[in-house]
Length: 438
Ligand code: PMP
Image (cartoon, rainbow, N blue to C red; front, side):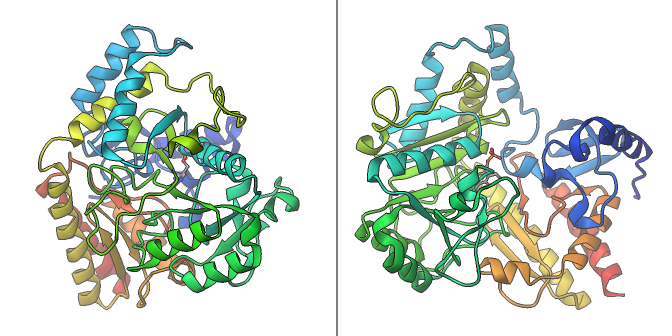
């Protein structure tokens, strides 16, 4: 099968006239994979996308993570429909919010109190404000390549090497703000130690994606999170886990759940940021943590955070329904098994065709890095063949397999993917890799 997409091209030309860059999030552009029109989708059902030219794709983009039950899952659709019929926005509290808060608390024991917001960006941004309010300190430490949304403080890249002050990663961020951020390589406890020795007295929080989802899927090395938490607390700073991707992605809970990852002690952060899956596909974010830290937040405390749309009944209903699907026995095991089959087959194909490929799989999701070395930090993820990825991406798209258009993004499985979808994808990947070997 080869897809042809004239209508997408037309719509892209039109979109460019009206929407900056033709897209409402830069990650949707095809800039990183050779440019041209992105695919305009018109419908999504289960594991499939249908584009405006009536091509069908098996979806592994999954909206960058939130879609885990497949598109338009009937249980979630029914919940959203019910919410719409009852009025989508009140500006008053609802019982639904308590139900979702209870569900999150039951699955994530470090949450004494939560607050719902509208995006992962907002959730992360507020955890930083709360940590600053609680510690009365200003600086934060983050890890290179971890993405925490587009708020000023976290859109800062490393200088050279560990223990350097940040430089802004975007125009429009004052250097003075970037100087409040210190960036350290992921999996580098020595780098963190140096940063804390130098700036520890002014560090409000260390923020981490406990399992990285933003430069491929990368596990923390055994001992990394334990060391990070111990050092951070010794310095009098708070630990913030950004579980916007990892929350409910690998199992019913988060990275911090006891026994979830046998190589890692379950360490409870002071604050957790959530998003994506907990909204079942509608806009959402949440943050929460220790009672005395969360009580910094208005109306109880001096740290202000608000939202017209926060906790709206549509997003909350969708989130509750999504978690109800994920609570069913065997759901995660099935996604893990399908992802294992797919990831292993892609790696075998690459080996057979002599294409250097590292596959990092964590349960039901994985990343494909065109390189011969392991990928354990951002430098190693950058040092991969972007052109090879772009070629692979396009060869897969031509065969009706939709991946994220970036070498740093993961493949996500859903409860809707079937064994037959996996077999089709394995064959497509084998074709693509064979062509790339030539
Ligand atoms: N944190 C992480 C780990 C993320 O992956 C993302 C988005 N990809 C965000 C925060 C920001 O979330 P949102 O796009 O909902 O603002």
